[in-house]
Image 1 (cartoon, rainbow, N blue to C red):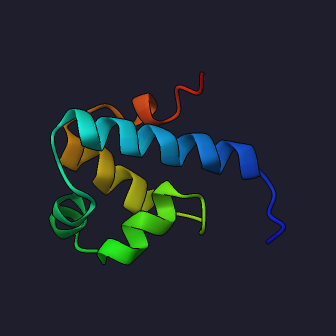
Image 2 (tube, rainbow, N blue to C red; image 1 turned 30 degrees about the horizontal axis):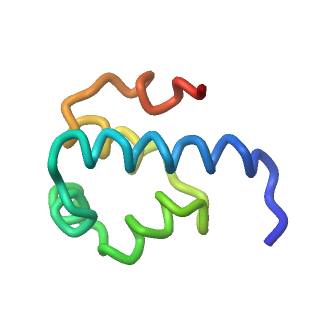
Image 3 (cartoon, rainbow, N blue to C red; image 1 turned 180 degrees about the vertical axis):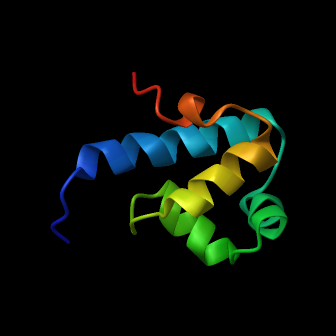
Length: 74
């Protein structure tokens, strides 16, 4: 799959997984909180699909973190 911003999506997915685990949530629990499938959550975290801003905003809200935290790429 060729996609612009591959590295940024990869880092975004890693950040989502990091904060999800820090909150003690499974992919299924987070997916349920934002009304997406566990498969979609897995694809987001593993850089297997693009993700909308609506979903990113929902993830940040469910994780109780500022959206900007998800974009702090190290």
